[in-house]
Length: 243
Image (cartoon, helix red, strand yellow):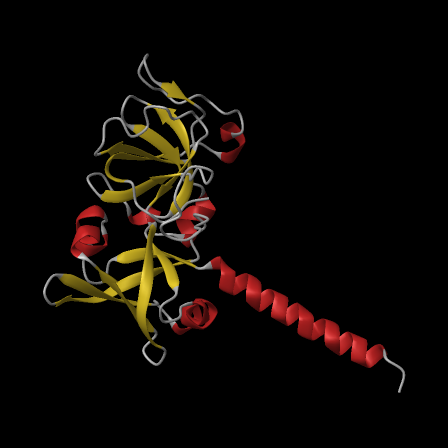
């Protein structure tokens, strides 16, 4: 679980696509790391990342969760200070991490310790729903930035757009942001970044047309399911009642 408050930005140092077959991958061959490093096992798609803060993962352990552009991934090697994460095929299908290459910048957040951490954003699972794209950016004087984001197709808009509401939360590349307004006709919505946030996350530097990982607020999904289940229950009870 995460808060959506980006703690650090990092640079991708390397992307390795392991072509090991599925049968041999099951043997879990250890990854090659420097003598001072620690590692788990090799994944089929591996990112090596270095945080801007060299002490960021000082107390991290193998197997810890870290959100990389909003995607909950497992630390598989600690290389002092770079680290590696493995990206599963399903994650590559559901997020933009398959587009990532060396020198790209990512937002980073370690898993929350809710007992001692202020929840300044909202509860984020790190389970991306769908990639969306940057449609437009413009300055909102004097120094705020309005970013327009669009669903890539009507199907995605129909499936996830209903959970994006004005003044509600969205998580974009791991950053908890508030929705300014929604345009359901054009399948777009806008968020506003104050100057401080612009310097702390990657969204202001995404190109027009660049993909962004979207995780909608899970509360909406739970409410929808509960309301739907209640309606079904009432219908069943009414049909079973004697007339």
